[in-house]
Image 1 (cartoon, rainbow, N blue to C red):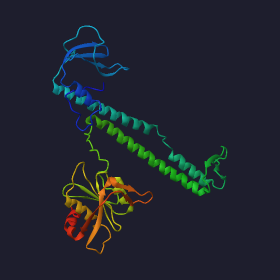
Image 2: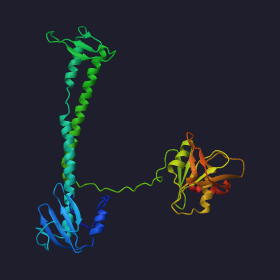
Image 3: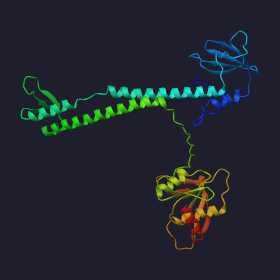
Image 4: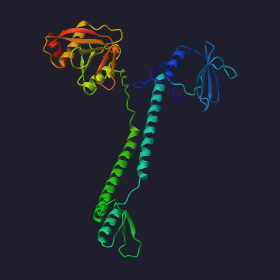
Length: 356
């Protein structure tokens, strides 16, 4: 039982309903409770139709079940054993406060975990790195250079030599410079960790006075509708239908086989190269003839200009097209129709469309 929920409630504003919410609401809303039996970790609510709603919060059997009979014995109680009944407004306010407190506890726990990780981080020793660099520079004539290490003696010569890692082909002066760079980098790291820790501490305190942000439900994008992809022109006709126009072979392939759905209308210059044009069509819709001709004109407008006043444009439904393997932008057309289009008749409509 994850919390209190009224069957008459809809989903919380800004949240998607849980998958089980609809079926339970359908089965229980409008039913009358006529009795109650209770045991540790289990309530049974008798419904007027003879069914029993079992609310079980024991660890292994927790859940909500609608049963045909009761498993508990004894008399049915006629009232719920609530210590302090209170009105719906107070109940909703308390539930909201519980949600806020739960959110604050989660956020503070998350921030506390980040602060612990920062405190456990290796503090480093920039001064020690600089000391090694100074010693390596001062005793450079006494340093033994090997393939993978420098053997660095102590100033007094009594302590054993320190083994300093050496990169392939690295000179002694390069290793000295690297010590100083590592020291500066470690100082920046320490300052960044300190600033981050201070910010997290302030954030942890500030959460006590905050409430969880309101979540908004993002509309689910359709399988092919939505964003205009790279290399694809997208225009909206006055009726609200979308038209997609490719710019090159790869974008033509995306228009036809990426954005296209089976019922959409497809257009292409019949005798010669040109863009693929896709006119979006809803299920069961009949597209007006003027929009079909306008989409066909777009197939001529964005392609190479011909010398004839009228040119043929072939068009069909997307479901009658197949891609040519290894040749993006080329299609096999199983069924087509042909329109004879005079582009000059659609210049004004096209300009209005491009300026929308």
